[in-house]
Length: 190
Image (cartoon, rainbow, N blue to C red; front, side, top):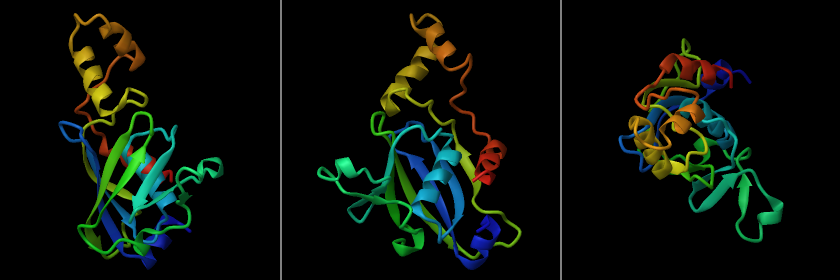
């Protein structure tokens, strides 16, 4: 089903996706059809934040974990498929919150807040990002705390790892940068 067709039949949820414990805050505001699956929302978060989908993820809804089931790990914790659960099945309205974790090693913990429930706009292709703040941290930098250390390192030309970290980042990194146009281009590829 195309994004326009899905949106024509569903309410639109305006979500604020915030990376917890990031200071200053890193967040994205996206609008999505209410009938998408959690698996689709995972793809949207990856594109909106700027992650590369290289690691496991999970949502927690009313105490139940959703993600990619791992049968060999079910004896420890049951993870239901995120392909079978749709947003409108559990979102109770505006102000509903739920967590999303990406990369269990680095622990990129996000809070998703349903800010508004809107009627679909036939002129808009969903999903769409309408605002955001700050760059997505690089993958595999050690979570929020490792990211803070990385930023300190690249800001200090005298730091012994300054050049190595800049090279690892590809030569330059602006933690304040957010490109709305590039974000929406990624979202349109979903």
